[in-house]
Every structure is written in C-alpha cells, then in structure tokens.
Image 1 (cartoon, helix red, strand yellow):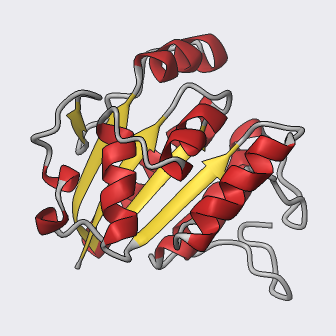
Image 2: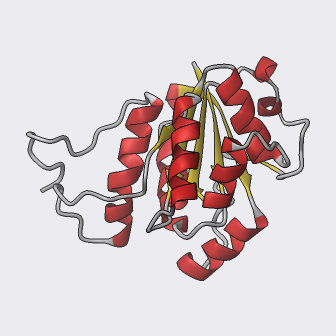
Image 3: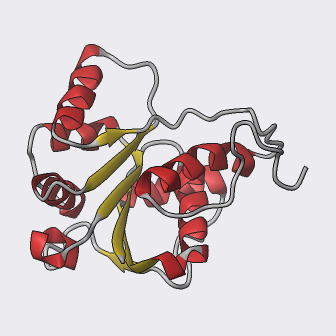
Length: 190
C-alpha cells in the first residue's frame, strides 16, 4: 500500500492543495500513510486566497519544514509518492539543482534517488528559460511536471470544481482510484 507525502509551497494556488488534501482524506483506504509539509509562505498564501486557516484537516499528519527526522527524509521510510502542490519555481529550481535545504527538497531528492513518483504541480505562468530547463532536469531525473492547467470538458461551475480538474489528474498520476469525469463518458452528477 502506498505511503504519500504532500508538500505545499508558497506559490499561488492554495485551492489546489485544499482540494487535494480533502480528496486524499476521502481515499484513505487506498494508502497506508499520508504526511504533509507546508511552508510558512504556503500558510500565508492559503490565508490570503482562501480566507481561512483550515489546512489542518483531521486525519493528516503535519511535519515541520525543518524536520529532517521525518520518515520520508530517508529512502528507508519507503514513501512511494510525493506530490508538491502548488510547486513554486523556487522549490522546483532547488530540486533541479540537488539542493536539499529543507524537508520538501530533501524528500523530493529521496523520492528521485529511490526512483519513486515525484509529481510537481507547478502554477506559475509564463515560464522563462530557467523554469523550462528546471522542468526538463526534474523530468529527466524521473519526476513528473503537471502544470496546474485546468480543463473545462466537465463544465465546472465553481473554483473548487475547476481546481478539481487538475487535482483529479494528479490523483490519477499518483495511481489512486478515483470516480471523476472521464473523456467520452457522461459527466458525473450532470
């Protein structure tokens, strides 16, 4: 059974992290452990964008950004999947450069060296050449770059539904089962 770590950085897009964490809690029978690391900037962005401090969702275990004793800071912790959502370009750059200066970048380094699944949900736009090269480097190292680019096939009507079009894709990429809109099928609930 999977062990998953979710990292939330200070890039804009707290709604993506919020929707993902709630969906993962609902899928708790499909993984054995779910850990969360959240930067202080991420908490500020969450407050600004969502107007609350509701990130401490019951059922989640939080780790400090400087807690190098966290189980996913080592390959022996056997975490299978890391999702960084939203992933700031600074975090992506440090991962691409092999700079493990906090728990998020250390865990990403561990996931890559162990040949496990790293999903970076980048949110910035447009990209400069440095961003593109960092995305290439992480991809060549085995990571998956999943831009927070929503789809509209399912005709979402709320911000949370728009965010869910990205989050559902992330959950698919993580290998977890999910009942969601599928191209060519009727829309769920519509």
